[in-house]
Every structure is written in structure tokens, then in C-alpha cells.
Figure (cartoon, rainbow, N blue to C red):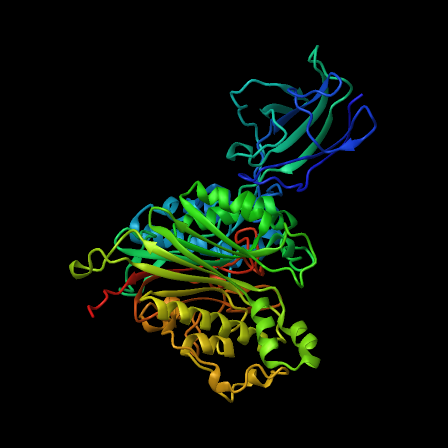
Length: 593
């Protein structure tokens, strides 16, 4: 007879908007074991599996901690109540929780007072977007705010039909499929999953149901929105709207799931590291930027096919993908990552695609320059499976003026992820140089603006960054000291002719002081685009050809104010260890020749 051996949930903390997909292990009548579903439409020897989800609601109202949403609140900040800050932000689970969060919590009070002074009662407009998360402003004094214990009282039952009742709890049926996606109505409540074998003829259960309870449903943490800052008029904060002849480009390392382990990111809650949670959070963020062109790195192959491509297709994007090569990688082809480029079909059409495999370039280099006795050693150093994806697009819009009507507006977009190993400085520089030489050939064949995006695993001031930003590398640069294969000599060959400029260096040229504070004055690059417990610095860039493009706006940078206290990335709010970069460009009118 069909029987259920085990029911398990991959994550014990359910989050609004993130699908719960239980693991159900069953034994078939022939004694084989599997996790395949047995629906009513395809019974096995007269039996099938029936699933139900319940929301368990206590007769007593439960307040949830604003900092630790999986915990029940025990005290409330009276300062929040007086300031009419959304009540959900006033709850804390312990006095220590409140004390630890005060540096961030206090800013809510200050902003509420400021909003009243400047705009009247605007608190809800300002705070409504935080969705039970805390701010990140560092202040230290909590002496003027008192707290009171939370007193639980009765609350009306939902008007829905009562399906089961047990003591002081009421169970409402909320789903009848194997999977369930929690909604806002579930916040603060425990969910119950029930799986039972049912007789196909009588439709009655066979044996006892298998059940499992979740912890309380928590809202999906949401960071404060990042604005698009005009760099042509620093006093104007724009919206992500590129309908006026400009276009926007996003570059984002989304952190491959196979790398998102508790060993590497133990400071991030396990539920926030899980792919079912991160994929929804990443999708919300990416779609919210409304970018015309999206360059993603560390996109796992199966996630591109099963998630990113179909989901972004729903939002009008066409997808292109280049998977990393597999000469070094020894895992599954499904989990190897790569570079994915998406573009909005209503804004661009696809003209051509080039794939750069640095492994092939390494083979050609060693055949030409390295003696036979050293080729194996050379290839072991150079072959790292990194790739680049180059896409030529044609714009479906124009701002070229009357003299250029009818001329095609092409854009070349390179998307890459350079080798990560810190000690292989020569390999990083060689990969960047190889990519730029390929782009030079494309530029020589067409009058075309260039965009070079990606995770270059190179900090500002490094040799790869210098090559990109100024077109050459100082022969005395310390990075050139690491060159065991002699592939960087002579240093005079480390040049290119593309007029590339880093988009985010534009912040250093404007009077927007808040953003200038987030830029390194020595390099004019962001203070960080990657932030973990072990490293904080800039690795990601968007470079553009300054002779054919101008920067109109940039997505504001993050600083400590945007991150939760004592938290690196990834976090419940930000689902990658990198931050997204986005720039709005305008094509310069072409002169007649």
C-alpha cells in the first residue's frame, strides 16, 4: 500500500511571497521509495496523496518583533506610539533587542519629528516603505524613550469558515496543493502542512495524516529604495524612466546559489540564504530597477533556464547566456554559473552575440609564447573557466536629431566575471586585456558605443582597473611584479584605444555631497560594491565609451546607513554579497562625415 515515510520543509521560517515546497518521501506498494507526487489523476493501486495547508490563529493577538520577525514581541516603544510611527516598528522581543537596535531605531523618531516640522503628518509616507525592517543610521542615545510590556488581548476571528479548532487555536484552510506561498494575511501565524494517503474510490483517508508545523510567517524584509540621482542636475532625484531617448544599464553579481553557503556567510540567517527566498528577493529588486539592459554575473545554469529567463520574459526581457567553461570546474553542468544579459524587447533588438572563453585564449597564448616544457604549468595558471558575453543591440528609439534620421543606433554591451583568486594578479590583468582587445576589433568595424560591465574582482587602483579606466598600466605598477609566465611583458603592450570611463566616477564631479561621501576621493570609485565580513571594497564597474555616450543618472550608492547594524552582505534585505550598479546613458549625436 502507498504510504508516507517522511515530511520535511527545507526552511523552517516561512516568508511572505516565498513558495514553501515540502519534501515528501513515499513508499510505493512494490517497496520502492521516491519523492515523486501521486496526484488524484494518476493514482497508484487505488490511492493518491492529498495535501492541505492551514493557518493557525490563536485567539490571542500576537505582536511580532520588528527586528527579529520570527520572535514574539514582549515590549513596545512608547516614543513610536507618540510619534505615530507605524505600530509594527514599535515592537521588540527583549530589552536587549531594543537596546541593540536603538542606534537604528532612533532615526525613526528623528525622521518623524522632521516630517511633522516640514510637511505636516507625513510619517506614513516616509515609513510605510520599510516593511518591518530597521533603518541603518548610527546614533547612540536612547535615554529619552521609554518602553512598555506588550499586553496580548483577544482579536476577532477571520470571517472565513472555521475548519478545525483546538483549544484556543483556530485552523483555517489556506491551500490544497503541495506547495504554498505565504501571504500578508499569514504574517505572525504558524502554518501547518498536512499530507495524507487517500482512497481513490471512497475519497477517504487511509491511515493517519503526516503533518509538520512551521514557525511564524514573517514579512519579506525590504531595504529602503535606492534612488536614481541625476548627474547632469545634482539637485534632481529622478525615477527609473528611460522613455525620453536615454537608456539604463544594470550590472549585478547575484551570488550563485552553490556559493551561498553557511560556511562562507554564517552571519546571514539560513532562511535568507536559501534559494527559494533569495530568488524572489533578487527578482523583486532587479525588476524594480526597470533597466533596459541587465547584466548579471554568477547566474547558475539551471536557475537561468528555470527562473531568470522565464521570469524576466514576463517583464518583457529577452535573455542571452554564456556559461563558464568546465576544464577546471568538476561539479554538475546544471550548477555551473555564467554571465546572463537581458534587454527589453520594446527598447532594443538583438543584432549579434560574441562569446569570449578565456580558456581558449590561454591555449592560443601558450602555443605562441610558452616553451613546450612549460606549457602544462602555464595552462594550469591561466585556465580558470572565466568567460565574457558580448552583445550588439540596436536601439528602437533615437535622439540623434534630424540630420541622422534613419541611421541605426547600435550599442555593444560586454558582460564579464573575471577570475577571483587574489594571488593571480597576472591572470586578472591578462583576462581584462584580452577582453578589451576583442572589443577594440568590434569598435574598429563599426561606429558603436561601448559598455563594459561586470565583476572584475579588481579594486580601484589595481592594474586591471587602470587598464580599463586610463587605457594603460604604469610599467612600475606593483601588480606587474607578479608575472611568472612573462605574459605581461613588455608593459607597453598593456594598452587599448577605447575611450572608456567609469560611470560611477561621475559622482565625484557633481555637488551631491551625500553621494560624494560614498566615493573614494583618490580613485573616484564607490567605497564598496562588495561587502562581507572578510572583505569590503569595490569590484564591480560599468565602463562606457565617453566619445559616444554621456551619463545622465546613477543609482545611488549604499553606505553603512543602508545596511543593518553589524551585518555584512548577503542579508535578509539584500540577497547578494554585491550591490547592483545602474547608470542611465544618452547617445551623443553623431557628427556627419
